[in-house]
Image 1 (cartoon, helix red, strand yellow):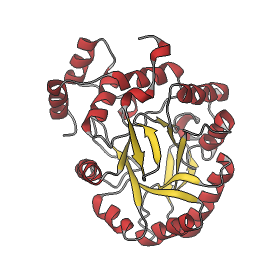
Image 2: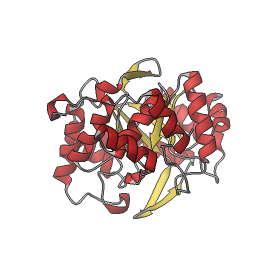
Image 3: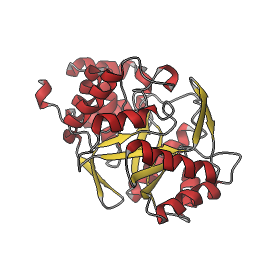
Length: 299
């Protein structure tokens, strides 16, 4: 497949919140930071090149967070892409603090969320965030207080649409009593399993969430869509070999087929890996391939 033929538009598109039209293969900007998602990347110029190449390949949704770096991911996005193309949606998140590499602590206090939002606006050079997501419920803070703070910021015009991350259906429904929710971002892939410091949601709860979002027309962003490069099973490998593509590409094709509201956001610091991921947008699994892979994975 020639590089010039690559386009995230091949995955189709989805409208989020009634007015944000994005192609269904996005870019997750967590891994453009340093090791342990801490500090600046070893190659800042390379990270900027990746971001610019993503937009050139028709990626119209970039997902980030104030905690990626912290701050570094948002700063690089602005450095690489501002002034932003009219078609580009930048989604960011607040609700974590960082103390070092691979160290994450939830903070859902209203004051923290207000400060996080203001910081994201400054770093991204925006007056309003198109999609602002609560990064994770904080067990030390009532969920309604955290969501209420974000709802207040939306009323002030600083947030266009509100999303949630790392939640179950019951929490989504509680949040919807406070503010309209347009998207959910949970870990989900064809090889989901095990614990992660972000998570308080089980795999079964996330499968229920995918089905709920599909039924109700909410966008679903699977984080870790490639299990950080660990996608591997005999069935995935067999399909990939038969098609002459990579297992990661088959994993992304499976996600795109799994639901019309699915918007995978694979992240990378490599242009070559970015182009490989975008090429997956053109892979249409057969009914039999999808059924076989679903038995092996998250169905």
